Image (cartoon, rainbow, N blue to C red):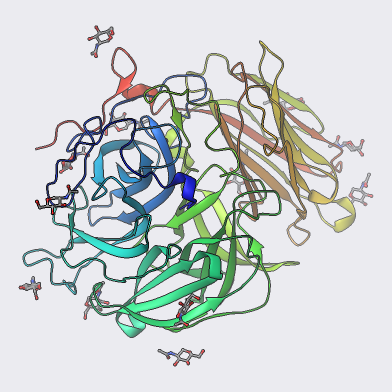
Length: 551
Ligand SMILES: *[C@@H]1O[C@H](CO)[C@@H](O)[C@H](O)[C@H]1NC(C)=O
Ligand SMILES: *[C@@H]1O[C@H](CO)[C@@H](O)[C@H](O)[C@H]1NC(C)=O
Ligand SMILES: *[C@@H]1O[C@H](CO)[C@@H](O)[C@H](O)[C@H]1NC(C)=O
Ligand SMILES: *[C@@H]1O[C@H](CO)[C@@H](O)[C@H](O)[C@H]1NC(C)=O
Ligand SMILES: *[C@@H]1O[C@H](CO)[C@@H](O)[C@H](O)[C@H]1NC(C)=O
Ligand SMILES: *[C@@H]1O[C@H](CO)[C@@H](O)[C@H](O)[C@H]1NC(C)=O
Ligand SMILES: *[C@@H]1O[C@H](CO)[C@@H](O)[C@H](O)[C@H]1NC(C)=O
Ligand SMILES: *[C@@H]1O[C@H](CO)[C@@H](O)[C@H](O)[C@H]1NC(C)=O
Ligand SMILES: *[C@@H]1O[C@H](CO)[C@@H](O)[C@H](O)[C@H]1NC(C)=O
Ligand SMILES: *[C@@H]1O[C@H](CO)[C@@H](O)[C@H](O)[C@H]1NC(C)=O
Ligand SMILES: *[C@@H]1O[C@H](CO)[C@@H](O)[C@H](O)[C@H]1NC(C)=O
Ligand SMILES: *[C@@H]1O[C@H](CO)[C@@H](O)[C@H](O)[C@H]1NC(C)=O
């Protein structure tokens, strides 16, 4: 969660300040309680398979957990009263498949006009360790930062109804502090020590605190991870997650500590780095001194992992697809609340660790189960060779596509050559987004040929050193483009990039070109349209109401 003095909203917002004063909930008259905020999800920049808020401003994902029925809960930093950051609430949405989201009522409100409910996490207290849940084993506890002009403290709230509504703990805070720089608690259950473990940022001290607790209420500081990797000017939103290692021994896992940095990323603004290591319940020890990044573009920040996914399964994250350098200015919203929205989340990513030939262990990030929102196949060729596929998708309602291109069948390193390039164009304006692989497998992305947004920090081009998979004689690229956001994945997620872009006219033509590949290589390509998941939910006026049938 971003913290600057300028963004801490002091006093009443937009002139509204009559508090309802029920169970320490401060609710402004233009912010609905008990019913979702409505929003219009049509519009040329509104993503259709990515989550974005109904209106207003969204940043970090929060509180993510999968409940006993398999429903995923996503909370998020939400300003329901303006199109810029501030006035933080916890917005809420649920989904069965991580693409088709139902907007729910705002879950956690600030306790007063100068308070913000900043980022945090949620757990299911199966064993009633907290004592909040006399008659159930599916109680939800949210752990989050309360921000005031004087301090940031760690507070908790509990939910009897599976995370739809929360009661703040009467003896908050559970971790007091006099610092204005102490935030973003992420809590997990650590089975070997039978305790809850929290990682939390001391942003300007460049420390990640590790705390433990038997009951989510009494917390003991255990250790700090200090000045690790790139510091930038602040550490934020730490995550600690155990992951399986692909190709390792059966049941082999390592722990991954992720830290978001803002400002101070090499490309400017916000970025997420991670460290692979081991964790014994009190101390995290990295395996090596390497700083690794989750993404090679600049719209992937503050990602959070779902609570309650076993270490034998692929872990799942959702990431904020924006950057603090320009997020308050992007053209998806106007000045007034109700006019558009700001920020989308990445699609849900599946994750595991894998030993790569050159880099060593790396976090693999792939788009989870995109097939669940595939509408139809627009192009397919299993022997493209050095050739080009053109796809006119002007009649695809969502304006969203998924594509794959695989070069396989190569026998030795002398044959690993050639490129796969893609371009998405506007037939009306000629604006485009392009990218692909290049000599030796490097991967690139160019969003500079779109004209709907101009900002000195809005970098045009991104690239990363990729590598052809010599041992397999292949390389692959895939991607999702969705009106104003593109995510690309090299070699099933060995590298990935998330980038927002803002054309004046919708992109509606795709050109996919394979060139210079060895005569023995096989090129398989496919392009699919994706469903207009959000627009399909709209009423006659395009308004998505969300879950209004609350009981
Ligand atoms: C709520 O009411 C209590 C008791 O009347 C008062 O002390 C408190 O300041 C009020 N809180 C807000 C946010 O108005
Ligand atoms: C609940 O209790 C069981 C049995 O003692 C234990 O194995 C498990 O780790 C506990 N889980 C949580 C979340 O408390
Ligand atoms: C949960 O804990 C509370 C407080 O210790 C206790 O009153 C209640 O009986 C417990 N419920 C269960 C199901 O264990
Ligand atoms: C961790 O760092 C913070 C900020 O520098 C400090 O206040 C705290 O005492 C440290 N905790 C431990 C366990 O070392
Ligand atoms: C974890 O390892 C550290 C040393 O890295 C040690 O001091 C600590 O006691 C260990 N904790 C547990 C719970 O084993
Ligand atoms: C695949 O591409 C090749 C080369 O352009 C072309 O000759 C062939 O007809 C295409 N196959 C299909 C099924 O379109
Ligand atoms: C294609 O690959 C074969 C087998 O590795 C190699 O002998 C040949 O030189 C390559 N062709 C070109 C044009 O590089
Ligand atoms: C592709 O182009 C390269 C370089 O021009 C050539 O060597 C190769 O034979 C071509 N591959 C196929 C499959 O036609
Ligand atoms: C590309 O390769 C992946 C395996 O990595 C496979 O699942 C997919 O079907 C292939 N795509 C095409 C278009 O052949
Ligand atoms: C999303 O879910 C709703 C009902 O929960 C269903 O009517 C709709 O068809 C689903 N949309 C997609 C794209 O799966
Ligand atoms: C749609 O918008 C029109 C014009 O603003 C309004 O009269 C009508 O009630 C709206 N319909 C719904 C279902 O909200
Ligand atoms: C709607 O919200 C209520 C809680 O207010 C919840 O019990 C119910 O499951 C939700 N329904 C859907 C479809 O999300």
